[in-house]
Image 1 (tube, rainbow, N blue to C red):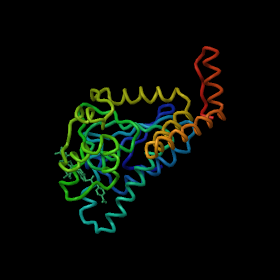
Image 2: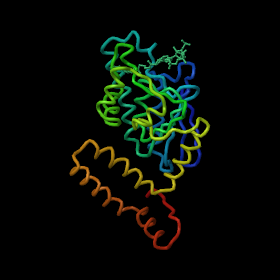
Image 3: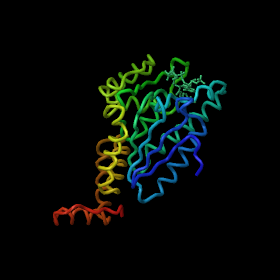
Image 4: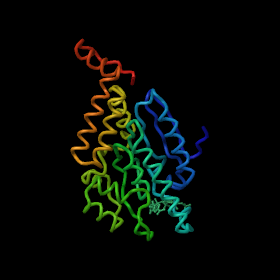
Length: 259
Ligand code: DAK
């Protein structure tokens, strides 16, 4: 697969995707969306995949949607661009394996939205986050108003959206926008460590946990609990459940196959 703006590396069951347009601080344009869609679509079919780490080359994770590409949009083009970006964010959010954002630097506008579509945001001390779209006279177009409010609460989201303030990694951690902040040199090692921990677990169970949280958080508690019970029942049709429980009883490590 030809991916001029992405670098893909695989180590066992973990794939690291690096957004690689450092000259534009990895700004998101239509080609980046096409490549991300192609890579995630093909990885979704890979039974040996356990987790994905998404990061950026250079000093940015992603500095936003590509302002130079957007500048001359008409309203229909802007709508189509927003839809395209939302499709890719939704694809990542519903991707069957955990996706970790390794936020190495600026995660602004579309970059913050991309990080929020991931399951966890592990950030370098150098990272900065924000939704500065109001500086450009636009609203976030890739789900930022929605995911930010769900993640940090409506008032804190409104503060960031109204002011466009770019906040430090520690501030983002305190708000719950980032989940962990580590020294820059520890960013990928820490993400790989988390991914390796996840990779040792029952892959179907991990995937169901992701699905249960994503579906349940948008539903009532009663609906979410029903959904969880259904997924719980489904795990008893898997070889992984038999292996996991047998391994416990036999006092040995489980060898999960994702079946
Ligand atoms: N798009 C395109 N190019 C960008 C870019 C961006 N978002 N951000 C940076 N670059 C480019 C710069 O233009 C510069 O390129 P040259 O001019 O050298 O060719 C290069 O990257 C390096 O940037 P700087 O020279 O500015 O680097 P600094 O370290 O001085 O500053 C910065 C870093 C991140 C503070 C600064 O670059 C900056 O403020 N960038 C813009 C950040 C921003 O406003 N991001 C939000 C973008 S808006 C929608 C769809 C989507 C969206 C909204 C609506 N609809 C369709 C409804 C989403 C919008 C956004 O994401």
